[in-house]
Image 1 (cartoon, helix red, strand yellow):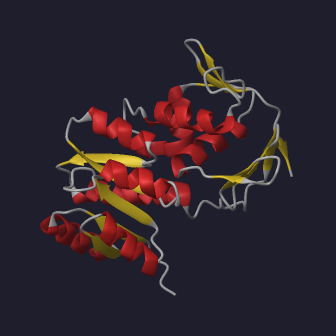
Image 2 (cartoon, helix red, strand yellow; image 1 turned 180 degrees about the horizontal axis):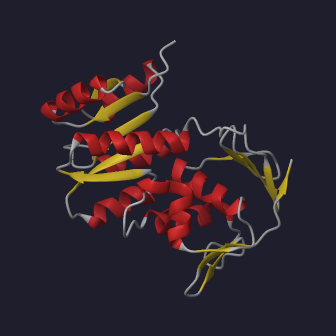
Image 3 (spheres, one colour; image 1 turned 90 degrees about the vertical axis):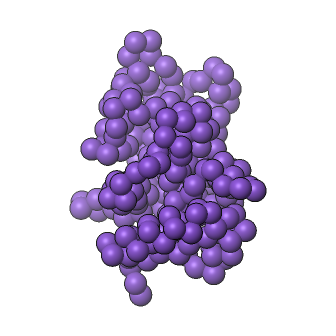
Length: 237
């Protein structure tokens, strides 16, 4: 079976789909393309997709709406393509579940680097020393090997790749103040860009999923002028 990553490019511009498709195939990826959300659903219904490159500015249903709808049923990593300098679209994209973003125009090599970085965080993250231990805190269980978060009733909670990596970083460093830069290092490593605000967006969304009252968080507390601290005791199993 072919183990190369399968990338789905969703963009209404046929020239961009063709250019990116040829470049990514040349660099070892399998590539499928779609011109809109309906076409995307057809492709995903017939093949396993490892990552989606999704343009925001498309006629009809835009990328934000497609991402929001996709996140209701799938955790497939998504890289958003946004208009250069459009911070609003970028932030909204992260809020609805995108894992990374890239502003147009861009160098295809940068997109390839982003794809590799996201796949490292979401896919083959079994470290050389073997699978990481299952982590338990409060009534929650994190399984790094399966990339699953379950509550006390065994119900799985859907997390995006970025949200999962952020929670895992906190759970592996409990009761320690972690700055935003440290969290970026733990979740993105060398791929983190200066002034990257993805941690802030993902933290807000993560709190909505695990905190009893996201407006008064008790599990992940903000430390003034310091960063954040994961307060629960964490046990391994």
